[in-house]
Length: 315
Image (tube, rainbow, N blue to C red; front, side, top):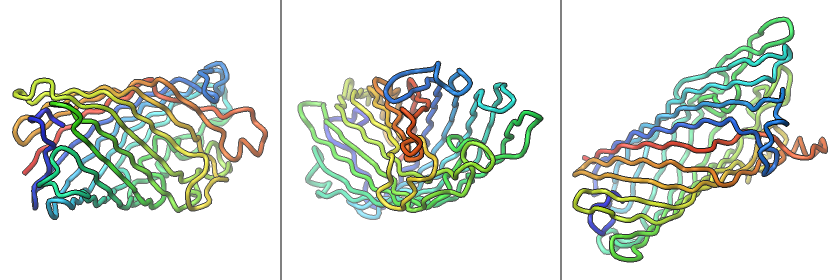
């Protein structure tokens, strides 16, 4: 909200907004189902992920109600684990440009008459421009062999996607707005054709992904353009895709729920945002292969917290 008075600030017709977003994710807490069980991690030690993502987004207001947003991500990731046949902990790394997306969104109500509440719906496409085969060694008992990095740190997932988005806000009292937003990535491709965990293993799935947020934003110091927010956030990867039939590939489904505090500073045409979602619940669900194998529960890492930084400028 940026704290600029008591009205939502729409992008004007033919206006541009350029944004840079940064995300830091570090995960080293091994879950089996909804329980933290580092003792059950492969090799008796949790896997460690460190992923840095920078998103460059250009948004153009075709009209007062219809916007187009093009996003180009850049990803750098590191994966460390004691899962190799030689019994030692090794590190994989990957970096590069990710999957580019283009989303069109429309405000359902006229912005000129609905500055205190509105709903926007969006639909778009994600192109497989990022590599999902960046090479990083696999460590056998007798030495390393060429392999691909863990899918969690690859710049791309190998498939086209359909993006569905929705967001809404409403003024609830003086200087305060309630907000809700959600997105769902439909991935029609079943599997990527890339071995999942070791040479010859079943292929990685190209999974659906979803995210949702809700909360309250308050203009703490309107004259200084400072607002704060507090809400909840959920990020997840489902066991079954809505379309595509890729359930039999290897994936690590589950979801994580965060408490999501944030602060925003708006000065003229510029805005800065910071949010640090903190995990309050996580659940690693069993994938189809694990169900078929009769395993008692899936295993996977979740982050204790995530850091989001953002900057935008309007023209």
